[in-house]
Image (cartoon, rainbow, N blue to C red; front, side):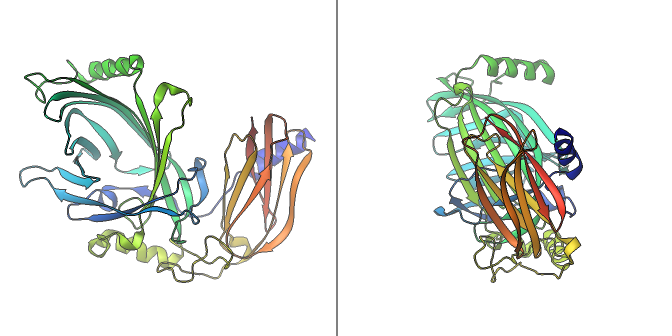
Amino acid sequence: MKTFLFLLIYLSGSCYLMYAQGKLDTEANMFRANDTIVKQQVEYKNPGKMGENVFWNFGKLKPVDEKYTIVYAEVSDTTTEISGTEHRTRYFYELQNDSLLLLGYENPTTRVRYDIPEIILHFPMKFGDKIEGYFSGKGIYCDKLDVDAYGLSRSLVDASGVLILPNRDTLKHVIRIRTIQLVSEKILPLTADSLAKSTIDKPNPGTAAEVIRKQLESDSAVLMVDTHRWYAAGYRYPVFETVRTGKYRDQNKTSYFTTAFFYPPVKHLYVTSDSTNKKVQDELRKSDLIATGNGNNNDPGYDNNSEINQKKDQLPDEIEFACNVYPNPVESQLTFEFYISGDATVSYALYNIAGSLLYMKRPHQLRSGAYGDLIDMGRLLRGQYILSIQVNGKRYSEKIIKR
């Protein structure tokens, strides 16, 4: 039986979907002056697993706040900086050697300028690419106190797959970037050389990074910000975002703050002047890689009226499949979500490590679209389990950890 389970794990492969993998590059994804982006705050949902060919279904999320905007603009004619204004805060960015850097920010109470900028993106970035760097700066709070800011930012393109948005549009060719920031901002008595004195007395960048690292290790008030951003081919800016933040060394003793934002693609007010991404959208529509939305009326991914939905006849052996299981590790109920690009016969079953069958959904015919199931694992012992899925006779598997 263990031999059977070994073959199930290592020969079937994980959820798999056949389509090209995207990347971010300067021409298609660099911030631009005069672009306006609309964001809608929505309910938070677990961002799901990392890996290739993941499926994310945010189709049922309800709005919390209908509209925020981000407005990008030139800072001045004498610099290459671009500002992005959101929530009454103005952020300053610059592209240096293919790296997008955050130079500082200002709002009605606080002004901070980084002497070591924070790295936001590096172009190009594709699945598996990662960047990290320390940052530090000085600022003023209410014109009365110093601000001493420093931290670490790590970004990884950790997933690719299919995404259903809150407006029910289904986007393929999506990649996700996860950014973890460790941030400390200290309020200190005002000194005469505020904003002029460097935060870190550094003879070279290597020494500065070591100093910041040690400060973060000894600082008990470090804030962690865990952000996931989803980028779709044909769009310059993210289409969805989740944020989770709290004290880094709290060890989950208190609840983290969580929220999510939906960037409606049709409300990206830069699109008509973005010839680079318009061309990508046109090419992907022709090859049915950007959107399908061809589920059934009871399916959360179904939308007859989507402006970008395109349907293409497919043979059974051309079915595209992606799935997501969460939370993983799981304590009680496991959520299993999956997407199929065409009509298919689907079945799935849960096995323990010895190969014993614990849960089964018998083969049933489904129309193209998004589906989900809840699997009760509350009474199962701690350990490893395997969820085996068959789509038109082709097998996929996911390893589940019960804790």
